[in-house]
Image 1: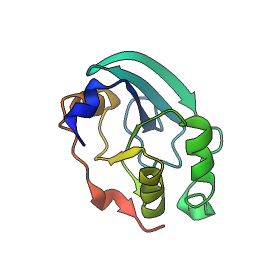
Image 2: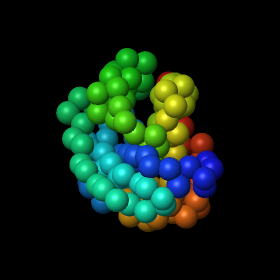
Image 3: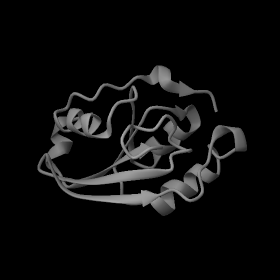
Length: 129
């Protein structure tokens, strides 16, 4: 991703199961911590609960996950998670959202790495849809 993007106001959603670590799968995340970034700094934070999780097991990668994005993450430009189906990854990119699939780490560490332009993506964590 481009560090220049960090200067613009945008929102970053971090998928999580437990509220402290980056969630293992985008579609089954219980909640998303959504951070508002402006000029490389966090200026706001909100919690969005995912009441209808989707997964590749229930066909959600091609249906329910799009509903999740459009209803819960409609204003987000970056999604950080530690697992995602290939179809969801491509679909998110097509919706002008940057998916960052990374090794599971504390949310705060992942966010700080992102803000420094150092969050490393691990596409080996993508799985067939």
